[in-house]
Image (tube, rainbow, N blue to C red; front, side):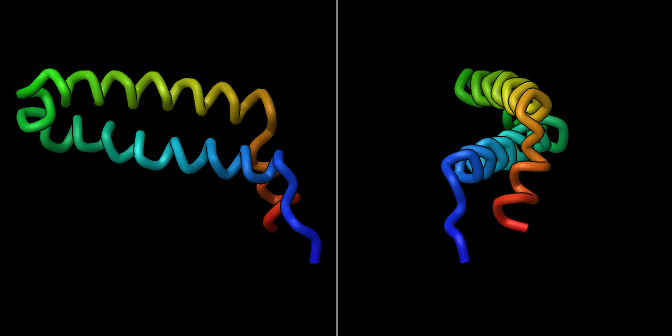
Amino acid sequence: MTRPSLRGFGAALVVGVAIPCMGVIALGFLTPERLFESTVGLVAFFAAGLLMVVCAVVANLYDLRGILHNEFG
């Protein structure tokens, strides 16, 4: 059995960043009054949206689905 390469761990890291961002964005739509009542919540929502866009661009540029399948599948 071979060990996953650095590309595999980078792809898993991108997915790992996207999952909490997805949760914060979902909270912004499910309970907007709680999330947006403070500046911290508003900044967290916009930061999660920006990070999600970055993760999407990286996923499309480097074919993260293929990398994850080759390394871990």
